[in-house]
Image (cartoon, rainbow, N blue to C red; front, side):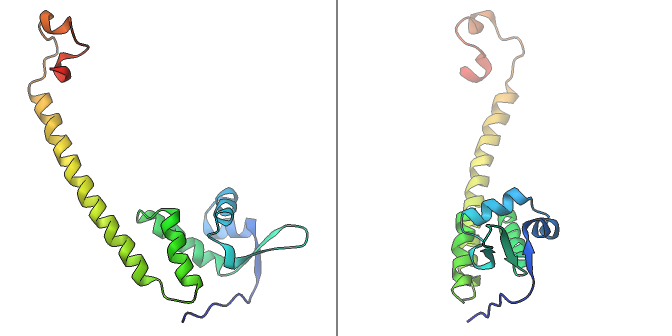
Length: 142
């Protein structure tokens, strides 16, 4: 079980933006989609106040995005954390899936690269007239 403390100073959204390096608009968006729910509260007048834990949470979100995770995937991981469990196992599964997806993309890109190199090796800047009449660029249409 992970201990979560919401004690301490509450921060206004501008302070959170300054400390996290994220825009106010991004922080609002993250709240709107539920990424920040356990660390934000509203005053009676509707202002957002964030617990000091928000900085660590936003850093986790930024790092997860830099590793290729979608906000939906990040939400799943944060939900595990918010339920008091260590989310490292769930995170590992997402990262393993990313590695597989990247391997597949690399394979597809290698095939495309070979095709492009093949096209370029036989490239003609001025193809014969009989090839131009029926195509836009015979180099890629034949």
